Length: 419
Ligand SMILES: [Zn+2]
Image 1: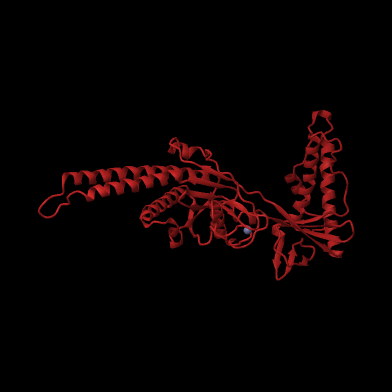
Image 2 (image 1 turned 90 degrees about the vertical axis):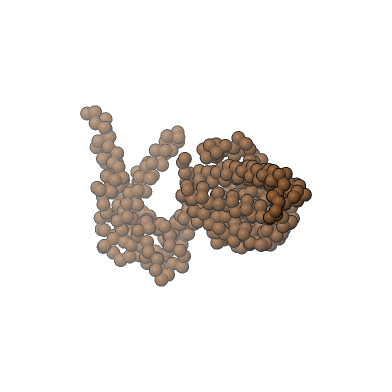
């Protein structure tokens, strides 16, 4: 089974203008000198080795070799990682020119120009944030660069010359770390009509509870029928044993209920295996299950007679998911599901859904159970009850129990038949 990492790192850049200063001029010139040295060394080595004379092969000095050859700028003004970045930038432009040439672009330009000034780059190792100041480390020969800073600590900082004059600081943030908050977290909303509705942050998957429901209805019917028959037979007391018919009926009741219970359990096993293996294949690490052990939810189920079985069947399914997920190294958490079925994921307005669809006045329309699982997930992530701009209703697909849904199939192929 292959785990698919769903991390897509997005970049976000914050730009700040900086006034011209001697220190920036010095640093920028130092970067320019190092860049020029890199450029000259690269082309010179290539020219000296690769004329094709004497059968020599040209030497394209690698970035690693270049960093060894030019470990720092001439005046040692730059942080060592800034020096690496300058060399890295030169090689990046070589690479992009190569790629453009490969694509058939005729004016793919290789870096040839010497530079007096060049942008200064700081990697995370050279950036510190303390007491509202961003400290950018430099080499031993010069003081650190300190900039007043009211924002978060960036992952990377670049300072370059602005065309309109002065310098510009570009603080680069990798948003992947923030997105990773919800990465690998899936939520499950348990219900009656739908055994489980799973929301993984992108889509909602519904596991139908229709068959379990009809089986448990049939079970209740059979029990009621047999109970009525049993009541008409003679019950044993101290003197007389129970009638033969009574014993027979009681045995029959036990046999039939056991049979139906086994059928229900079988369906639940297949559905839970399918659910857990699908999540595992997606790289989900945390499974959040809505806790339905409170009164509010059980009140919706009408006649009291149905409750014990439903509660039993919900609890059983939750247990199956829990141990199967934990067996695969996933973490399972219960989450209080108060208001999760009533709150709009987009604008947090509360409203009791009347049908299968949840439609909010803000325009958000989604399957009712999918809303429940979206909100359970939001509760776990701590974003529940906060309005989200532009939240989309997830695509909903259904998984229906089918007899050929064998355990083997469920564990190996995350293929989902449509409802
Ligand atoms: Zn709304």
